Length: 542
Image (cartoon, rainbow, N blue to C red; front, side, top):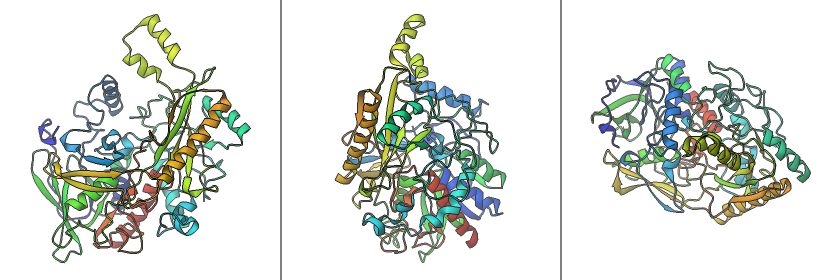
């Protein structure tokens, strides 16, 4: 549905006078940076393509409204986040990429429905080429990011422990104590000990005790798409902090293009649309684009000009290329005893043992899932049976499932890329993003390796295997990386080590699109750390 067909919205979406900073996107990358710069006393405007989900005109509390939306989704109704239709159209080729399956346009971005696992990249991830002859090196190393990692953990409120022998060195404990292992973790632990496989806790961006004005986790188990208690971090909290510091956030304001000066040295304005069909120009001294690994290159490609015929900030020709994701591999089944799955809606144990070992081309991390099998809540909501009949169905379908998942690294390949497709347009008449994506033999081998290890664990448990997500079925984790990669050479990268574009002095691109390689760790903590580092550079320029 087009934005222009929605209900009347009286909010003022006219541009501010020329400000110090204009941020495009309000996910974790944009929101954290906007708050940091606004708190330093600078004028900031944030332009967000989607709506606010924490501000309902009918007065319904956000958690209740999201719960209502989730029930509607489970019954076959409209998407919780309103994704799809002309506004969110895209095309895909190669393996096929289901872009709309896990993205959100709205204040808070992807953290509105993320799982919340936040681990640091390992030292090898920054030096993959020099250590192993694979991919490329980052222009920064682990030590460069260590202080920003610590700051990011405090900003998000990370609960974790120092029990991972494979993790990179830390400078201080996590801000919050870890979550206790789940009941099913104890079952896995016995099997893994016999196999010589190490388990350790998962750092989570959710409160194990009250923190930063948010409650502790109370165990609803409905962590995706939303945390009813507010214990799980979302970027909405940094949006609110940015606004408290004086920033202005304009929702439902999709940016159509960026204009630059006659010399092509600086961006002068972000041109954005509003629900009433008007277009406005927001002028600023500095610009930061934080739209994610797909929409950021798309916006720059839509901003092409005589000076930049191949897209803004694309003198290197690599904008949109080297698109990477993590692949999910898994094995699941059942055992002859209760496992208490779905009592915890997030992972509490994982394994990094096979990440830095002898074959770096097959890097992976294992996840011991706490939500294998059907959820009894969802089953009950969807059921067409009642009373004793429903209870009998639930007892038969729920209670003894187990599964081991994992993320597999995908190395950067030039042919995997994000472009624009002029044969199809969105609700504003702009060419839609086009994703060309496939996996190579190295990635397939890593998925197969993950499956072998996962099968060993389930076999040791005596489980009956019901399903396997292997190379032919493996789908993306929806971690969009690599499309505006950082580097020291302007001919082979888009941004420098502070995430400023090589081509325009006042334009920075933040988010996982800057990752030269992706590792196999969930990217959000690294996104936050890089955003804090980029914020320091923007502050210095202002």
